[in-house]
Length: 178
Image 1: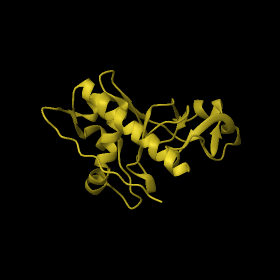
Image 2: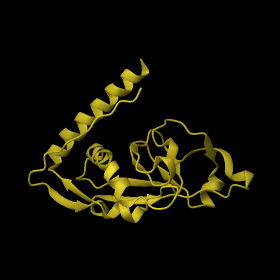
Image 3: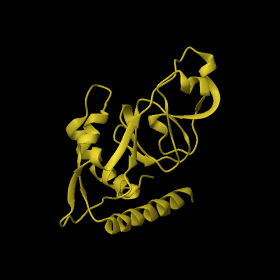
Image 4: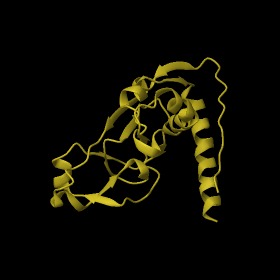
């Protein structure tokens, strides 16, 4: 069963700012796949298809982290899928773990509500995909995402909007589990 909801924001005197002005961002990397010492460790390795999950199929070692571009994210960080079938998907991390190059981690500045920003990305997903998707496998770039312009309301309004959709997402999750 697929549940779809659309979000419409009434934009009245909201400030227009680039994503790069709202967040600190980074992508990860993948440890060399032929090196057994880099895998089966205790660090969850989050791939783009797993940004909504609370566990991963792969784990890497500290040695794998140290010898690659993999970067750590923490529960609650915003994860944005750049590559493949999940391009344009966005979620809050549900676990601490390392990310690969197919994920852009977005850490909102203090004046930006993470739940609000996640919902903005969800609302804009089809526009982003239609406008910017590059390559046969459907790849976005971090540079494209950082240049997007977001209409930002006051901190109070961001919190109200973010909280509303966070509650709605939780209700949908509970309903799907029934």
